[in-house]
Image (cartoon, rainbow, N blue to C red; front, side, top):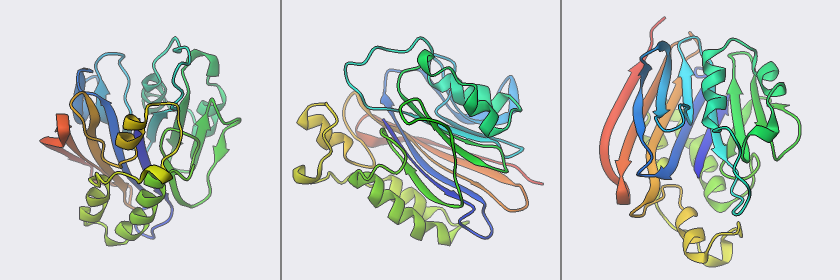
Length: 249
C-alpha cells in the first residue's frame, strides 16, 4: 500500500513535484534511495527482492511510480509491478508508448504514473486505457487515480498548500508524516479486516511488521535540475536515515 501525490505543471517554477509514502513489510529487502550502481542516471530506491522500484527519477527528468491495487484474494501476477517503473526509467520510450505496450495479464493490480518531461501518463490494469493527464494535482493510493479515500483527499489538499513553499520541503514532509486514523464511519471497505482498514487509513502507516518505510519528496525545476529526498523508517515509524540526491544543469 502506498500514497502518491503529484503536481504536474501546477507550479510556475517546478513543473514536477511529488510527495509519496511507500508502505511495505519491513522484512522485504530494500536499498535506500541513491544513484543506481549499474545505471547512475537513475535515482531512487531499489527493491532487492524482485529487482524493481516503487519510485524513481532520472537526471533527464523521467519519472515513474507505482502502487498496487488493494484486492485481497486475487491471484498474484507472474511479474513484479516494480519492474514496470524500473524498465521505464532505464528505457527511452515516451510515457504513452511505454504505457500502451504493457501486458496487463502479467501483473497483479497496479497503478502506474509515468513522466517523460513532456507528458504525465496514468496507466492501470484495473482502469482501462492509458490517460494523459492535463496540468493539475493528482492523488493515487491503492485504488484508481483520485479515488476519494479520506487520506488521499487530505493529502492532496495539504499538498496543494505545501507546494507553494518550495523549495522549502517542510510542508510536504509534514503531510507525509500524518499518522492520524480516519473515523470508522468514513473508512473505505476494501476487503481487509476493520483493524487493518483503520491502520491503512492513515497517510503514515505504523505497525510492528508493516508500515511506511519511506517518505519521498521529488521535484524538478524549470531549468531541468532534479532533486530526490527520502526519509526511511523502521517498525512503528522509528526514523532510520535520510538520503538526498540532486542534479545541477
